[in-house]
Image (cartoon, rainbow, N blue to C red; front, side):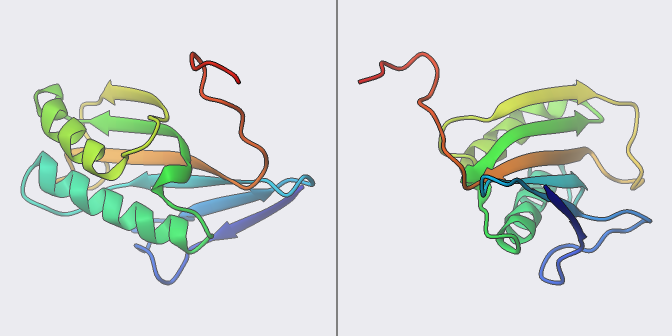
Length: 137
């Protein structure tokens, strides 16, 4: 197993002392990408969510992945009344089989005006089995 910590130049840069992506390469050729929580500027939940997913696309692309490779997503909202706006934008970007997901309400986030923060894990390469609950032929 090889671990690489990265701040891809093509993606959003961290606003604090952390790295954006941890790349874990397994011996079987599979890669897991752990992406730090992302926030974005914007007026309202929908605009911030859209900015976050645009940034995630860039960070994943820098490691040969895309949004369809996301297997887990964790979302932190400062106001659950904005969940519908968040979910609507998320659905625009995550169009395939939904990843595992956790959404929690928090009192605040580090950027003072942030309403939402999203972190993801993506899997690239390796074998994928059938989606659970679907018939196996």
